[in-house]
Image (cartoon, rainbow, N blue to C red):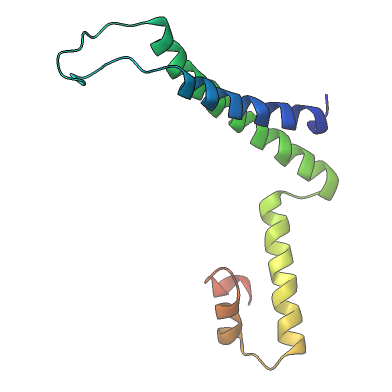
Length: 116
């Protein structure tokens, strides 16, 4: 199945994992609350498993979306953003009287070595 199908499902699983984790109370642990018995219950297990599944779903969703992005643009998201920023900086250098030092201050990053 393509990212158009898996991506939204994985993001839905991410949200559902946190809803599940929040719907079931955690077990007492490490002496809190004071005097509570430290025993493992089914709802405590579900409380821990829900967010763990959510984290795994989000991790896989990021991989799916990055793979789809690379398939459609031919480059990674980081390389694409960097290329867009360099193109914007080049445009500003050619169309304004800004020096490179001034231009670096207008960019999102403060790494001027990308602009040289």
